Length: 418
Ligand code: ADP
Ligand code: MG
Ligand code: MG
Ligand code: MG
Image 1 (cartoon, helix red, strand yellow):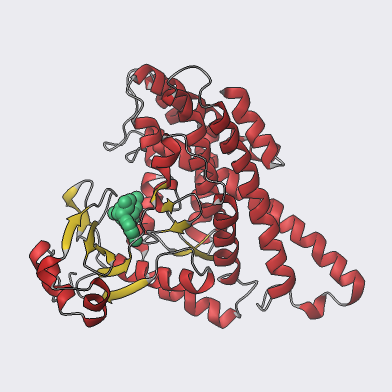
Image 2 (cartoon, rainbow, N blue to C red; image 1 turned 180 degrees about the vertical axis):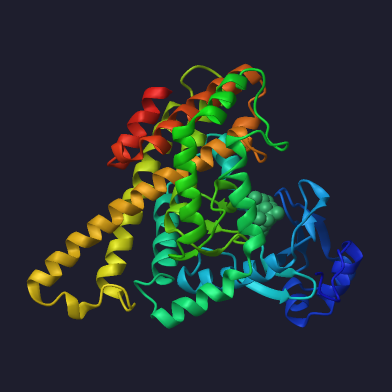
C-alpha cells in the first residue's frame, strides 16, 4: 500500500519540501522562490525534476504509484524508491565516482535528491548521434566488475550474503516486470507487444512459433528467477548511463536485486549491439558512420574482455567470501587449479551474458518498451531492416549460445549481418 505522507509532488510542493530540508537548501543556495524547477523525466516509470539554485543543482526523482509509461491502470509499488536508494548507496561505496552522489532521501515521499549530472547526456542519445566515448570501457567495466564481485559469494560471508538477498527480496514487483516484458511477452501474443509493422510481422510470428527459442528464453528466465549471485543493477541499458567525453555515471538502479551477474553484462553488450545495428538507419550518406560503428564493435569486445580481466583480478586479490575456501586449494598446485577454475567461471558467465544480451535485444524490438536507437529511424522500412538484423543475431546468440566461445565471435557475427 501507499505509505502515509505520500503525495505526488507538483512544483510548489517540491519547492516547499526542498526548502524544508537544510542540506538540500544549502546546496541549491539563494532564496527558494528563485530556484528553477523543470520536470525532465523521459524514463518509463518515474518523475525526475532538475532543480537549480544560485550555488548548485540537483536531480530529484520521485516514484509514482503506477507505471508512468502506461498510467494509473498499471500500479507499481513506491517501495522501488527505497530499493533504488539502497542500491545507489551500495554502488556508490563499491564504485566511487561512477554513480551520482545522494544528497537526500525521503522514504514517505519515495523521493531521492541526487547530484545533478551536467553536462552529461544519456548515453543512448550520444550513440544515436554517432558520438564515440573513449573512457566508457574503463568506467563501465570497473562499475560492473566491482559491484558484481563485491556483492557475490566470492567476497561476502554466507551470512552477509543471505542478509543482503533478504534486503532486496521485496523488490519483486520490479523483477516481475522484467520476468514478463523481457522473458515472456515477446515470445507470445501479448496486448502490449508492438513491432515495426508490417515489415516485421513475419519475423515476430516466427519468434512466437520457435520452440527452441522458447526453451532458451525459459532457461534464461529460470536463471533470472533463481540465481541470486550478486546485487545486479537490473536495468543497465544505455538509457541508464549518463556520459561526457571523460565521465560515465550509472543511474536508475530501481530494478536492483540479487540476481545473475550476466544480466547486467548482457544488458551493456545488447545495447551497444543495438546501437551498432541502428547506426545504418542514422546515416546521412553511405558509410559516414563507419568509424563510429567500428568503435561500437570494438567497445563490445573490450567491455567483455576488460570486465572479465578486472573481475578475475578482484577474485585473485579480494576473495574474502565463503565460496572456494583457500584451505581447499593449498600450495602451487592449488593455486594453479583455482586459476583454471576462474577461467571456467568466466566462460560460464560469458555464456550467461550472451544469452541475456539476446533477450534484451528481442524485447526492444518485439515487446512493450522500445528504444530511440531504432525508434528515431523515421523510414519504417529502413528501421525494420536494422531491427531484423539485430533480431537475427539475437536468435542465433540465444539458441546457439555454446557456439560463441569468445566475444570476437559475437562481434564477427554482428559485422557479417550489417
Ligand atoms: P526512470 O526510472 O523513470 O527511467 P531515470 O532515473 O532513468 O528515471 O531518470 C529519467 C531521466 O532523468 C534520465 O533519462 C535523465 O535524463 C534524467 N536524470 C536522472 N537522473 C539524473 C541526474 N542525476 N542528473 C541529471 N539528469 C538526470
Ligand atoms: Mg531510466
Ligand atoms: Mg527504463
Ligand atoms: Mg527506472
